[in-house]
Length: 490
Image 1 (tube, one colour):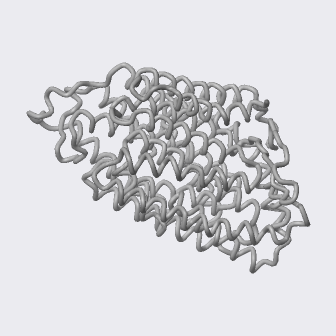
Image 2: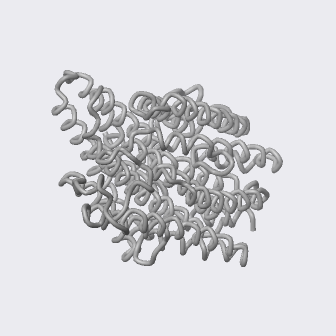
Image 3: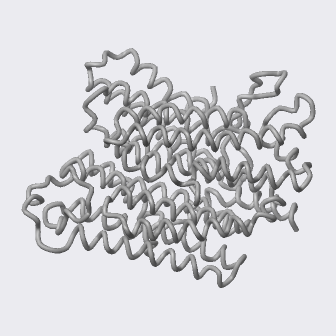
């Protein structure tokens, strides 16, 4: 068994073992789940150590045929695009489990659902066959639906159904696009991503455009991009905070990851729809930022800020140049770390105060100095302050976008200013002013909470001050993707 298969099945084995543990033994359940999540993270780190950053092609490939008649295969592999997402998925799953000690009811079902969600997310990023990719894509819906519907807030049923209907609707369009490309495959040609990329470029240009629109809807719902974002704020607000960490930190990146794969597969159609893509990106950035600015519920604020940051990723993708593509990977990683840290910290604060209304707080720096430090750094990263990973990602977006559209990037600057406004407002309302009587006895972060938040904040600062390893990890693959795009459209 290869390392990719081992990495993939580790959370599934953990879920199977948890199913055999008595439901009343919550300590053993929590311990086992955290051990298997930690093993997955360590395997992904070992993958980074063994990965050759100078080779942009697929590495550690594993493949065997599932159905000879259909040509489907169990094909796994990683490159500079998927590897950062795999590490991010395993890291945030471990963080989410560390933040799950507040879950008191149906603990066994909760931890099994989290591990199965990790299984699906890692499978999406490792798959090199579109059929396998689609299976893992749909597999993530089941545990996420259960997690929101069973352990969510007062409107959890509406939020879970809304999420499933949106995502399944988008998946239908993605499936139609895959079936359209398969018509141009040779008999028994299979559904490998590499083979379908060649087939897609042999399609008539007008069909390529329709196929790309199908993918745009399918992946755009998951990202989410404007105006396909309707499910996101409600799902974030109602989901348990550890689930929001995974939802914002990883699930949204699945859509962005799929879009990058698709524009390399359909560069001519992407060039035709480039104006549409940049329009949706710019509207989403400003629209999401303005709505985030208006929120008093902190989880809703972070949810709408995600719409804005996903708009930046769509802008990076739409540039179709090397700077933009590396910016997309950096923004995906940066947003995963920043949004994960923000949802973690907001969730920990809510557990202590049972309110997410920012108007209920003031001067928390006096009673929760450790929390204040981590939250401030995270908000600085969200606004793109130099010295944080958010700055590196947004700098690439500005440069890549300017190369393609010039002064239109003023609108990206407006979006960043709006993000700065609500981040500074949040810092001011949380940490300044007189201490309110009901907030005087709040406990600061505990040891395991410090570890969870500290890992994310350390990564935010480390990659902000020393981004070279993160850029080098993806650069060779981005060069290959950029060459493929240039050969098709220039």
